Each structure stands twice: as structure tokens, then as C-alpha cells.
Amino acid sequence: MVLSLGANKKRILAVVLLVAVAAAAFFFIPRGEKKTVYPAVTNDERIAFLQSFGWQVEPEPVETREVAIPAEFSDIYTAYNEMQKAQGFDLAPIKGEPVTQYRYRVTNYPGADGEVFATLLVREGVVVGGDVALDTADGFMHGFAADSARYQAPKTAG
Image 1: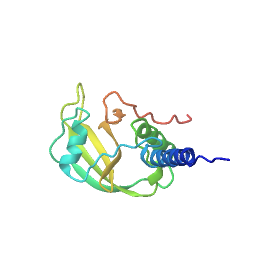
Image 2: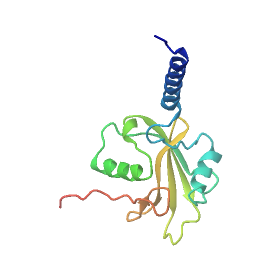
Image 3: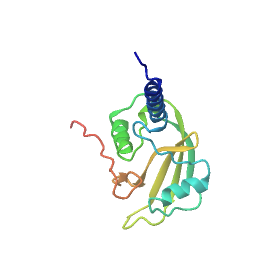
Image 4: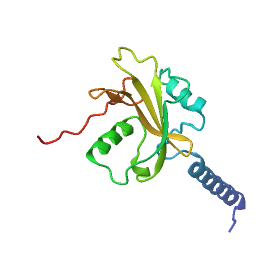
């Protein structure tokens, strides 16, 4: 009886190579959806983020303040978060957490009948949400892109 070790060495090498390729694929091929991170540590980064949507804003925010994302969402905040989700953000994972809110006056909103503000919500140096809104009682609110999802206040029984 004759055993061929050469064939076994080739098989072992092939199996080792296959395992190595599978391991590399496991560690290096992206799994799931990657979330884009928008840095917002500096004023320049925040302005550049808004400019990426075509907005020109005044060079400094008109208001900067710390706010907390509510620990429990009301119907209004649930509707607001739906608008956030439509633009790739989600405030639910940071319920109850503090964020910094920056409001910038938009200077190039077409056809606006009043002041328009871009609001950025920033946590740990990255944008986590926000909106563009006309600052009147019957004004509009939408995501950062002009054609993005608009905030729809929940209907109240009446």
C-alpha cells in the first residue's frame, strides 16, 4: 500500500488557506450599515456641515445652549425623531442625554417670509440631529436638505 503525502499536504494547505480567507473576510468585510459621522467640534466644522447642504449662515451661532434629549418621547418628540431618522439620525439611543444645541441664522433660504434658522444638535463633537426651520408660529421645519422630510406635528383630538 502506498500513501501519497504530497496530496495530503496540498489538501491541508488548501484548507488552511480557505480558513485564512474566511477569517480575513470576517474581520475586514463591512457588516451592516455604516453610519456617517459628521464632526462638529469647531464652529468651522459646523458651518461646513451646513454648507454641504447649500446653506449659507452667519459666521457665529445666534444661540448655543445645553439641552437634554427627553428620557421619554412625547408624541411631538416622536414625530420630530421620525424626521431625524429620515435624514440618517436617531435620537432614541441618546434619550435622557445632554446635547449642545447650536442655532445659526440662514442667510440664503429661498422665498422665506421671515427668519430661517439651522439648528444643530451635537453630542461628543459630532452632529446627532437637527433641522432647518422658519421662526414663525406657522413656519416650516425640515431636515438639513431643502427637499428632506418635513416635521409633521401629531394630530390632536379636537
